[in-house]
Image (cartoon, rainbow, N blue to C red):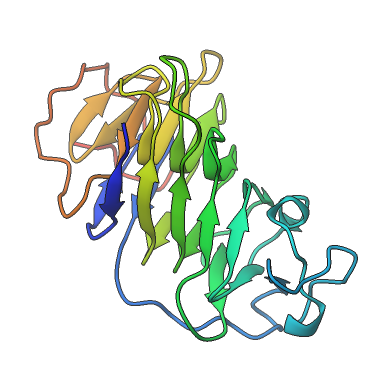
Length: 247
């Protein structure tokens, strides 16, 4: 079933041992190379995967090449505005507290369009934390889905990971995601935050309501997940040091 939505909500998914925040607002300019980290560039129209990628004139061409890059605290992966890229963007690495890794746009014109062409997700972050995803146009339209074709625009996935904190999705348009139309486990959706696994406990809360160790939060257009949402309850878990347990 096609999903046509633009992210316009501010939603927090707080967890006792895993946390994620989705925020939508005005975009910010890309930082310069320096104390903030290194800028890497993707230009799907004129780039070259054999180039260094560290300046607009040496931009990479494909999402596949960008996905091989390991980003660290303060690093930015920038995609040129006005271009269209097909494939999956799944960069490696993680940011740090106060210095996230960032996916953003550069240049002038429309937001860069990323099309997943029926993949599990167009933008996929797995077992990582401290990331910002900004100013993209994301779709994922493949062949007519079967009952097992799970598809997402943006998928943030933590599997037996433990603590996963600090995710921001800002100014990202998600539309035309035609995955199979069902919910947990492992659903389709526009923007998904998924906690899975069985060896490391990750009991979580969403807008004050408890969810099981393996659960999913899905962004919906222009709405917050309602307080008191109908989700299964789990025993209260001890919060990490320095963090208050959810009420």
